[in-house]
Length: 403
Image 1 (cartoon, one colour):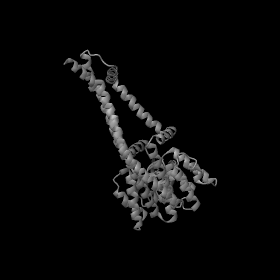
Image 2 (cartoon, one colour):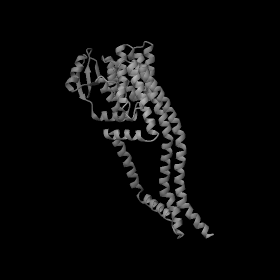
Image 3 (cartoon, rainbow, N blue to C red):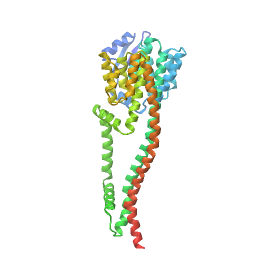
Image 4 (spheres, rainbow, N blue to C red):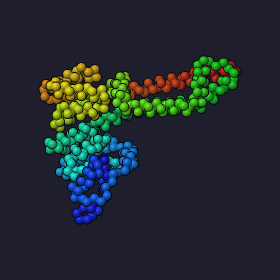
């Protein structure tokens, strides 16, 4: 927990700030150790924390901002600028106020004697375990710039991959969403007027038109209930997807969806291979690297497979033994990893895997975009055909009989 303090330094100057400690007594002791004499130490109000959390969720640090941060940071370190001055310079370039505040906290932590990895580890909502482990390895080996560049490259690859997938899925989601909204509004405002024309003429109503009329009346009278059910279903699904069992079920369903499942598998394999290779090159022990990678793959199914691989290595076995027995790992992946284990060039094998599946992912994304367009046209055509056949055709027949 954090405490807000007012204290005097050795020169008698009043200083204000915050200190993190387990309790008030520990906070006072920490101030004394920094040659400060506190005369006011109060626990930070919870409301401030809530407002800060709300602001953080609204002004969240995205992957593009992280990529820019590490790129600039690596450039400055390579120019022999100190870590603190590098962070200060990068901070001035950031527009995200939350990120600026976090960087300032990191600078203060380093000035207080923390390592860069330890200060980053205090912000898991921004810096992943993969990032922290790579930075720690760079600090130990003396190759901090190389580690930071690895992280920047990795974030850039993940960002580009996610952008391609989002771009391919945005179009169909937008079209389907617009079609559903237009259909809903049509059933409330347009269809009742057209069906009333048929009823007023006293014509015989076909069964399929009668079905549309019943549905339209239900929409008109209970539109609010439909909205409540839809919003409740969406909210409930999102809540369930955030639970442990819900995320596991959702991850399993995604892998079984045609085309999307194949695309997801390739994304997870690419993410595993590139991140695992980066950690091994950075000098992280293989078991620790597997555990870290399992947390950033972002799929519980693959996380379980990777963790079983870590347990296998602990007991003296090979990762390929676990991978070869999983239906979610292609044979070529397990064989390439086995070759890397036998030759001692695991990072080279992993880079080959990542490169191959990254290209395959690009091909699927391009084909997916081409495939979705005709499917959407057929989908929209069926919807229009139903309305024409059930509403406009009876009206046309009635007017024809009148003539």
